[in-house]
Length: 391
Ligand SMILES: Cc1cc2nc3c(=O)[nH]c(=O)nc-3n(C[C@H](O)[C@H](O)[C@H](O)COP(=O)(O)OP(=O)(O)OC[C@H]3O[C@@H](n4cnc5c(N)ncnc54)[C@H](O)[C@@H]3O)c2cc1C
Image 1 (cartoon, helix red, strand yellow):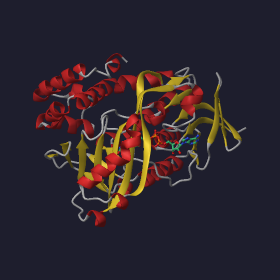
Image 2 (tube, protein in one colour):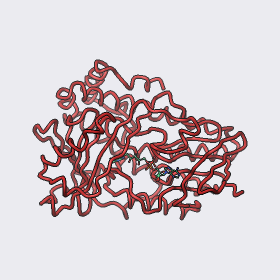
Image 3 (tube, rainbow, N blue to C red):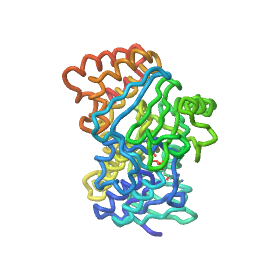
Image 4 (cartoon, rainbow, N blue to C red):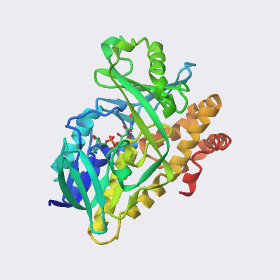
């Protein structure tokens, strides 16, 4: 039976970057994905500056636009535009990004097999065993990067979500929009849907239009998307490749690693509560899991468990703040929006999005009083992320 140092299940952003790092470190890596590549994934395709700066290579060949400003409003009120002209988010399409990341992993030496659905995983004290397409494969360690509906977390009794969101998105060619005035700008429509927002993101020859919210909003998302489209003069019939998907929000007490197994990215529920972004978390967890696997292989650690503690430590404050702003926006939309859109707070948001500061603890000077006011609103709204402060 073939035996590897590590098997990675799932070749999305978390799995492919984890495989790239492990293969670059000299490990023998098998990267499995059930889909045939290139494959698409429902996603806005926005790679924030803080996500991009985690990568050990550039994404230039798959970037279609660079967002330098954000236009936002609350419930179709008046527009506020913010941005300093510096890049905030790289806009790509997942069909291109994910193929590129998997190619990088393969070029680094990972054995990448697409069209290989993992049917079963087993973990023991000496190693792991995976069955894919009827073939049994072994490794010293397993990383489950198989997304929100994957098999690894479920089978290995890892993970667990505090909540789940849903989002629906599609593409509209610029010629049908009647303008390409969206270039370089991300449009955010807040307060339309409980627990989420609507967006228009610029791509090379089209805009991506979408809406997300709490899972219970699922049955109403098409209706919400129609409302959003109407506000932009878009006929819902012009939306191409319309598709929806789930957004998992991790419970602070969930276990991310046990023995020789770990889960990363959406499989671990690592989506950011306020933005719905998950690629930063996918890259970060992929990196930390790869380091834990190398420590295990080199005999510096007895298990992958230190990975879970490191990740929780790094993301804790950000998740607490993100949950807080989400709860405050749901409960007190006007006051929260007024505070969040202020130029002083926005400067901190930009630094966060670019990755110049790790979390709100990096905010300085005049930004601190409005951020404290936001924290107070979050407490009144129930402080749903409170547990992350200790986690
Ligand atoms: C509508 C929408 C918009 C979003 N917009 C953004 C955005 O603009 N920016 C951002 O940062 N995030 C965004 N997100 C979140 C982002 O898409 C996810 O967080 C990200 O895809 C997580 O990456 P991943 O590698 O963990 O999982 P995935 O990208 O889901 O990859 C998992 C992989 O595992 C494979 N797999 C599953 N089961 C098996 C199996 N049994 N065997 C083998 N392979 C398997 C799948 O085929 C898939 O390729 C959005 C999400 C949604 C739903």
